[in-house]
Length: 254
Image (cartoon, rainbow, N blue to C red; front, side):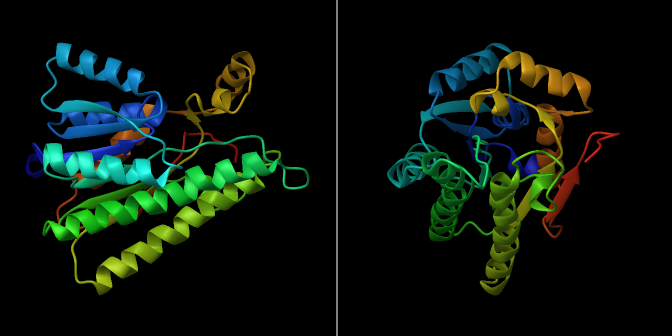
């Protein structure tokens, strides 16, 4: 990880769960991290906690909504003007609202795809254009995907959500090919975890008691496990591209 010391990463959806775990681990490994979230006060709390712990890097809390293109451009511009620009992008922000395909709400469907797919694509476009304008040829793009992006698991009404994750799988491979054709050494990695203990179900309106019971009754990963997978791919030698990494809890039934 020595070559990443002092370099800059943007992490979306960094106020809780996987995003917060990734932001923490990168800061502990000497990166300067721009934590993007609508609840930026939670990112600021994490930043202060890391500072008290004497972390080697630094976390900057920036308010932003990945469904808003102007917010995305503002974050990338702020990062360049204040920190010299991003070298790493972690597309982590994601939602899973109730969205049965036979009776979905248009609002929920649009929120699902605008957050999980369109926001990811826009952030990637802006960061890569910024990297290339600065002559950065060893950057790294991460897409936090899911096993739902590789098969439709046996869970009720998961089709629409799976559609967003299948899109991420295709976008990741498409980006790899475009970067290859541009003769750049910017790497792209998709991290596809199985079930992870996070707040995503609660954010979708599932009562905490029910959400917790699902985790307690099934094998699950912790957010740090996903963060460790990011660190593994990031720390690979420059000529090694960990393109797809699937991690599942032992005994998962899907």
